[in-house]
Amino acid sequence: MSQILIGVINFGSNSNKFLVSIYANKTLKYVKKYSIVHKINEELKLEKYEEKLSLMIDCLYEILKSKRKKQTLIRAVGTEFYRSSNQKDYIIEINEKYLQKLKDFTNQQIKFEILNQEEESILTAKALEMYIPEYTLIDMGGGSTQITTKINQKYHKFLYKFGCLSKYINLNEVDDFISFYKLLQTKTDLILTGGSFISTLLAIRKIKNPRKQIYQIKTQELIKFYRKIQPLKDEDIALIYPILREREKSVKTALWFINSLLSKLETQSLKISLLTLLEGLTLQTIELNKLELKKYNIAKHFNEYST
Image 1 (cartoon, helix red, strand yellow):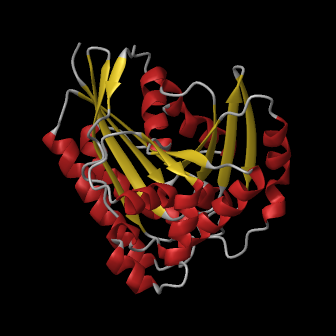
Image 2 (cartoon, rainbow, N blue to C red):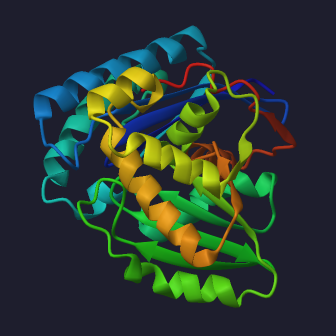
Image 3 (tube, rainbow, N blue to C red):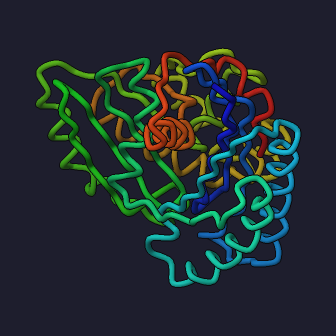
């Protein structure tokens, strides 16, 4: 069977990301993952947004060109900003204009899909399930938060309209999840994902080239790190931790939220997953095209994770 190039793009409230993979012989190999922070949900500066989007699309174009295959599958999805913002229609027009630069590889218009929160929660957990069958996954994005528990082959989803760019978060909003989790007879692993949590992990552990997809971390490490960066100015955080550049405020919010939540759950340790919506979209794309998958190699796809 000939090789198939797969590119998936996630347009988010805080950042845009893509992942390029190659499918061949029932095996999936991830080639490159890329992320760029734009904060469109926080500061609607269209010129700056377009400049960053152009850089990302140009980067994706060059990768697809260098890895060109007989068949290329490209998907582009939007999350919370595109579900709720009054500005979404205009930003979608901008996104679709730049997506047409990739038309050379597909010979057709690339459809821009808007995922609802339930779809986002299930797809974000999809790649994680190849490692951990039962879990509680907390995915905090810029504009929304999805908490998904899978236990006894059943999903329990808790969907919230706040994220790490929210100016105010009422912790009482997650009381339904807290009550549910405390009543579980068998506690599942608590796992965090999302740009702010992944960047925090890379900063705490000083990881430049991750070799694993899931890392164990103690609650105390997150508390200690939050106390360290909380009083710092944005420019000082970016200087000390370059991986947090342009995520300074969102990381503070994400850490405040998760530390408050873990305190209520009385959890001493948890995991952070580098597997995101992008990996889930890639696996779903394989399924939708009726391709069989036996294994995948993602050991090195974070080498060039960029912010």
